[in-house]
Image (cartoon, rainbow, N blue to C red; front, side, top):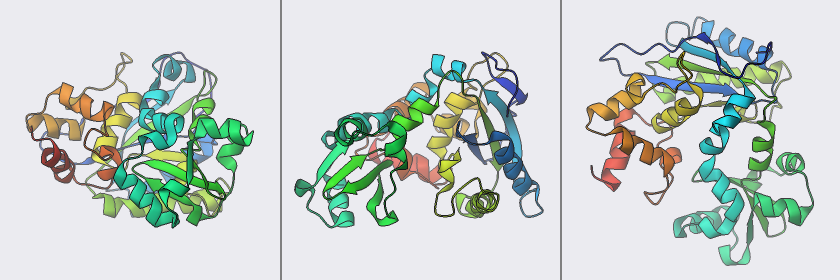
Length: 300
C-alpha cells in the first residue's frame, strides 16, 4: 500500500468483532516493509477470493501502519522482544533442553560449539545487518528452536537470530506497511494450504525465491497466543488504540475461562516463563490446546 504518509494508522476496513458464541481463528497478517506491498496484497486477496477459500476466510481488518507510528509505540521491538534478547545475549539464554536439541540437530557437542548472538556476529564477521541476514547457508545449517533462528555460518560458529538486526533496521520512520486480519472457522491444519498457495503465487510472480519461506515477504499468526501478540501491535480502532482483548476471539475465550487481562498480558510479555516458549509451543494449536498448555504448567 502506498500513498500519503500518515502519523496514525489509515484504517481501510475497521476491525469487526466476531459474533458471540463463534469460535474462530483470527489470523493477523502484515507485510514486510521491504516487500512490494501492492503486488503482495493483490496475491493475498486473489487467493482468498478464489472458490476454495472465499466462503471460509473473511477479511475483517485492513490498515496501513506508518513507520513513525510503529516506532513511537515500539511495536516491532515489543513484538520481537524475546528474539531480540537472544540476539543480544546468545548462548547465555539457552536452556538445558535447548542445548540438547542443538546438539542432536547439528551433531556437535554444545560445549564444542561457539554460539553467539547476532549483534556480536556483526562485529566478529565484519558484516552489515543486511549482509548477515542474506548470508546463504544450506537448509540443514539452520535450526528453529523455541522460536529462535540459529544459523551455522562457519566451522563451529553459530549465530542466534541472525535476522533481527536487519528486521529492526528495516522498520523505521519512513516505512509503512499493511496489516490485516483474516477470520476463519478452519483449523490451522486446514488453513495452511492457503498459505502455501500464497507462497507459490509469490514465487511464480518473482516476489519470492523458490527456496525461501513466506516469512521473507509476510508474517502470519501461527497460533492463538501469537494472534493476540500480533493484534496488540497491529490492529487498532479509530481512536488509534489496540483493539481490546474481549474483541478478539481468543482473548474473549480466555476471559470466559476466568483469566484477567493482566494474566493475558503477562503471558505475552514473558512467554518463556513456562520453561519453553509459549508462542512457538502453541503454534497451530486450537484454543483449548493453547489454554491447556498454560493451565498444565501454571494452574490458574
